[in-house]
Image 1 (cartoon, rainbow, N blue to C red):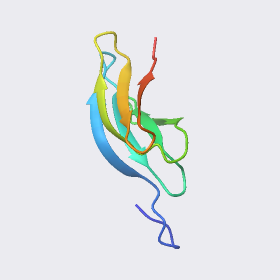
Image 2 (tube, one colour):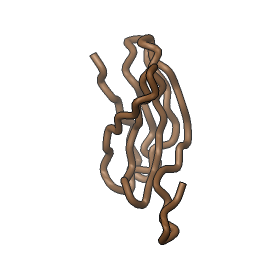
Image 3 (cartoon, rainbow, N blue to C red):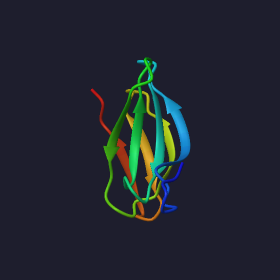
Image 4 (tube, rainbow, N blue to C red):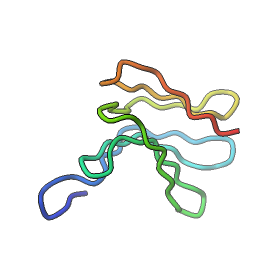
Length: 83
């Protein structure tokens, strides 16, 4: 997805689900920054913003329902604590 200046809005990489039925995907954007996005069962999206230049890619759900992801440019592993 892009804007008139050629900057992209969102570039999804990986996707996972959690026990609540929500989808989560890792995304980078020149306009919106790096984020983990939650898509609810109704289709509403909620971004969880990450530090600039994180470049989130790999993503999975742990046994407790939290979302784990790799920040490839940040050289970190992150956890999105949901409960």
